[in-house]
Image (cartoon, rainbow, N blue to C red; front, side, top):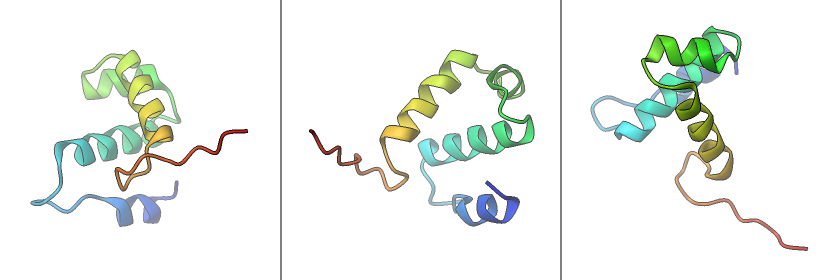
Length: 73
């Protein structure tokens, strides 16, 4: 994600939910540390496992908050 893309996605304050702010903080910090969950966790003061858990959530739920439609075979 380029800096311009990240800035476009920055939540509006006031008005953003804590979940949106958390997502932004995690993704921007990961970008800053080159994707290292352990380094990002140290900067954010959370566990690397929490970052991994959130990334898994972000992959399965679009930013709109509407669950992704999975087509079964």
